[in-house]
Image (cartoon, rainbow, N blue to C red; front, side, top):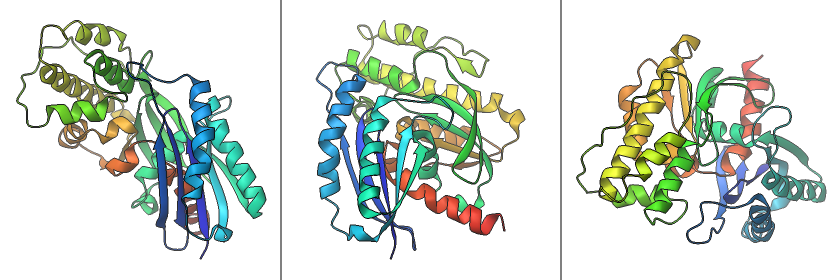
Length: 315
């Protein structure tokens, strides 16, 4: 057996995964959400890097399989697959991976964090993918991407998104205002389960594919002293879902047949269900709820997708 070791050190999660490349079995999937002090809306990059350096050896030590069988170390070394894309947090995982690959005398591959999210959505569908529309919605990113498979990873072009804060930041900032722990989305979703709530009237959507959300932060934030939490949360989730669907419709001229929805916000069941019910004309692919959030499974799986595409698809 030959293994692929994946490492991802994002803004809020340290993760390591091990995959058997001969049968695609996930042998290990170790993750640690970084600690954010109560009341804070996030972490500074230097704080996140410090925690990654602390947790990487701990997660690596949990892997019980024979690491001498690792043939490839695959890491997320940058946010996007484009020149100049950089965040300090990814340096921690990149350098840790380089040391491991040198020690094991195996191949070292670098991908982007965004490619890893796309890959996590394709674990069961990669043999049918060439070109597609990808929606990456997370705490740090809201981007709509026209993408296609290339020899290594994916070629991507941003065709829509937010120009200020992201959908994930909108959720977290309002969640903090309503006293939910950070990151807030999961706790907010759990809070409204089983509760009946009316829907607030929200301002009209912009018809552009690039939008601003800071005004909506102020709008929803002004209502927290007037309406019950479940009313605000339900309206917020529906607003985000409706906006995502509208931008997807705005991009229908690109004529993609496949739609991939990835990132932490994509784990939200309310947003998932709304997209599934209201987007027409696409094959819609979501990662599992677990693999919607930041993880190393996607980056570990990328060399498998590359190999299939290069050795089988193109021949």
